Every structure is written in C-alpha cells, then in structure tokens.
Length: 521
Image (cartoon, rainbow, N blue to C red; front, side):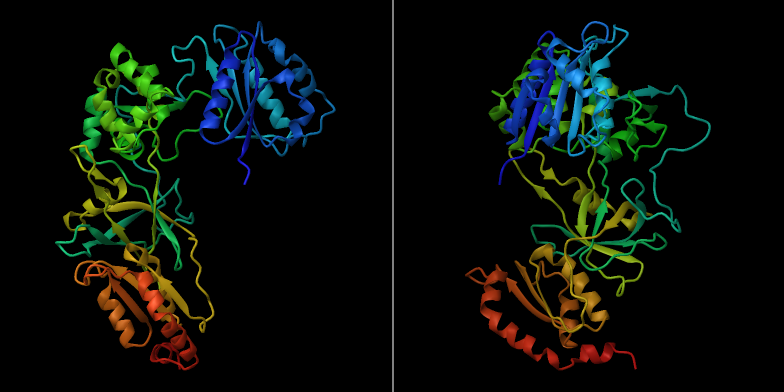
C-alpha cells in the first residue's frame, strides 16, 4: 500500500520560509509520510489540481508583496477564468511568516488562504500566522483575560444535556448521569480491580443496542490539580475568559465562560498524559532558565530522541511530572500558552455491558482499573479507570458526563440465527448486553466462550450465566487458565468443543424453554 503523499510549497524572500518548509518535510518523513518540498515557482502549477494534500508556507515581502520565487504562481492562481471547483480534491493548510510591525501583516498568506477556498480547496485548519515580532514566532491560540472579581450573574459549570432535553447528549453537551452503584467484581486477593458501574440514564434520551459504546469524559484528581497549580504558580480560584486571537478560531466547547483555573485544569488539560516531542519543543521556547532550556532543546532535537524515550516514554512519565522536573521553566509559563502546550483530555470509550430490555433506564459498564509499575516510584494509573473507581455514590450524589455512539459489533436480528461469542476477561462486556437483549427477545442459539484466570476471582457474572443455562437460553464454555498445571485458554476450548458447538447448532430447530417462556400468548 503506497504511503500518503504530502506536498510542501514555499514562497521565501530571505530563506526563512524555505527553512521552515524543509523542517516540515523532515518531520513528515519521520512519520512515514511521503513528502516533496519545492519553491512555488519551480512547481508546475497546473498539476495542483491532482494534489490531495498541500501545505503552503508563504512570507510577505515589502508592503504586502509575494516573494520573488512565487510571483509566477501568484499571477496564475488569481486568474479570473479558473473554475470554482479547480481544487475541490485538495486539502490544504497555509502558514504565513510575517512581521506585525508592517501594516500588511501576513497579507500574502491571508489572501492565498481565501483564494484556495474560492477554488474549492478544503482547509484543514484556519490560516496560521507567524509573527517575527513575537518572542516565540507564533503567538498563542488564545488569550486568558483574568477577571478582578467574580461576575454578578451566571455560574461556572460544564455544558451538559439536561433531562428531558430534545437534544441528544454529545461530546459538546454530555449527559451528567448519576452513578447508581460502583461494585468491585474481582476477588479481594485478585491482582486487578475490576468494577461493574451502573448509571441512571432516565430522561436523557439515550438509547442503545447491543454492541454500542458509551463515551465518558474523565477529570484529573484534586491532588494533581493542586500540585499543577502550585508548580506553575497559579491561583486555582482565579477566573478568566478565553479569547481566541483569530476570528475563525473557536473556544473549546466544554469550557464555560467565565472559567476558573481549577476548572480548566480539572476538566480540560490532560496533565496525566505522556508528553509528545512537540511539548518539549514549545516548553523549550517558553523557558527562561538556561540549563533547563538546554535540556529541553536536547529532548526536542532529532539527536535526543533516544534519551527522551528513556526519560519519558519508557517509564510513562506524565506532563505534570515533567513540569515538576523543570521547576524554573514551569514557574514562568505564560498562562496564555497552557492550551497550546497541554492537550485536551480525551473521552474514553467503554463497551456497554447491559441491555435496556433487561435494565430499563440503566447503563452498565465493566471497567478494569489500569495500574502498573515502572522504574518510577509512583505507580502508573489510568486517568479514567482510576477516576471511575474512586466514585462512591454511597458518600453522596455522583454524576459522570457521558454520551453513546454506535459500536462496530452487529448482531443478527432474525430470531433463529445462532451466535457464537468469544469474550475473554472484560472483553465479555458487549456479549453480556447481546445475550440479555437476545434472551429478552426470545432468541436462542447463544454460545459464549469465556476465559479468565480463576473461577473464584474473576469469573464475571457467573450466577447470571448459570441461571440462563438452566433455562436453556445459553450454552457457556468457560476456560480458567490458572486452575490447572497446564494453562488452558479460550482458544483451547474452541478447538476442543468446535464439533460439539456445530452439533448443538443443528438442534436449534427445536424450540427451547427460553423461546416458549418469552413468547406472548
């Protein structure tokens, strides 16, 4: 399969745009992306109609003039007889290199971006405007305007879908679902903490079928939020409004206006994630401490990647821990750059483990709490699973922002079609939803191969499966890998019992008690 192709075209007067373009080309090749880098006037512009992905890097010369090595391209692209669909197959981005002390700051990049849109091109992102006057070359996406006192009206909170709303819950407006129960379903001596968590989705408008997934938006722990604010010298209670620097850039939909620093760090900044190389590049630009800046530049260089891997990726060191290791730099980070430096917390997807036909207005998930040890003293913990495990509805009302989307598993709708399901460990969750749904609809031929380590430690829903077996609604084939000297896994059971399954399938012509009891008179 051929690798994706990227074309980087530059218009450069002094060589800066060419240098940036060549750097983009090297970065693309590092990511296994085929890339060509050319000056705009050396590229046969008529071929542009066949290019799927192009980045334009353009300086602005004099009083809004194009650089010398793109003037021929400039005259061609602004021909009035070019059709409005000429570039309809092209995705593009424009990076402008300019100087805000001039009246026509980045005039060429702005005008080119508009022209490419007129010719049918699809912009991957708003035009990016570099400024030679800015200490970092590129300004932050947003400015944080701090408020001297709390506003007289309104209150801080997440944008959510309210019960009874006509709007379906989504990432921009999740439903705050009450947690009904949070139960550990593995034995106390088992190495892993696995939770069965149930939510109340009454009045949310949420509906789902077997195979669908629920997305949950986690948040950082209060201890980590406090530590982050201390290291950066931020007041957690400081209120601010977020203002985009460019008119076509929108603020994150999940952040309220105004917003407190505590809310920003708790619900938006992914300080528990492992930082990428770009994090160190920007952090080096922001650093005012000579020794720390030197080390950050080393980590962000091509020669420093092996050392960066050993420092950060192998031990899974988090953004918060890196900032603690570079305290002088962390203490001088301008708040405006927080959203450029630290990525947003991503929602986590979980297979839904229940059916609305069996548990009306309820949604259940099976969560394995992620925790492991590296050479670092503190254990590594999964952000979402650890946060979910910490929620205790017995101590008071607890709500979790969530929404549902279709999954990739599909089950037959015809009642006589048998289904063989293989679900080791927590992978059995979507099949529990399917079995509940199929049994409620009178569908037989449910065969489940389930694998775990120990019958008495991590045999999820054992009693439920046994009850369905008694009613002839399920054929269960378990495999316990640690209960005998030779390990036995699900795949062994599949090989051993394959012929038996086909024999049982042949018997499906006869109605079972499950079918008889589920049919209405």
